[in-house]
Length: 177
Figure 1: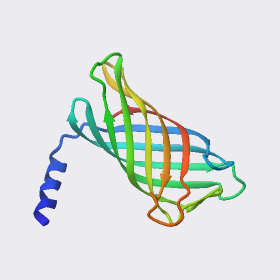
Figure 2: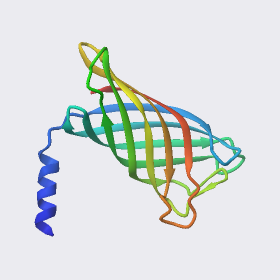
Figure 3: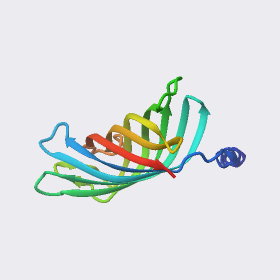
Figure 4: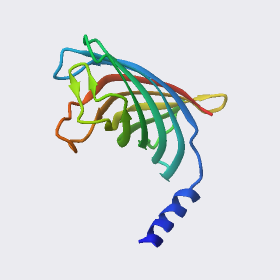
């Protein structure tokens, strides 16, 4: 078992570092199955990319998310996450590089297990996010990043109480450092 872990670690560390994306995120919208509206602000940093092929990349990053709600109590939480992100690119390039992305099972710590009328069993959660993005040519290379997505936090039913926390519209704007 130790040699498998060693081989996986060497492969992970031997991959070229192609990332260094810094993204500012904001957005929100109505919480499904609730009367509350959620708003979000955050910062994401993708620090490692594995290029499986020209059309498939996997980014590894960290995320800070602040969520506030329109409910009368339990109005704010913060989440700290580590995420894997799968990026799927089309064959053709144009003014920039469009892509579809999925973040799933990003382990997260949430500062409170209540947000408005939403409840999580404890402070452990997962970040999930799905959307579209584009890397836009600026300064003769794909430096700017724009992404539109749906963001979700839940504990994936690992615990009894699992009211998901959703932000139906999130806009990420960033640069490649």
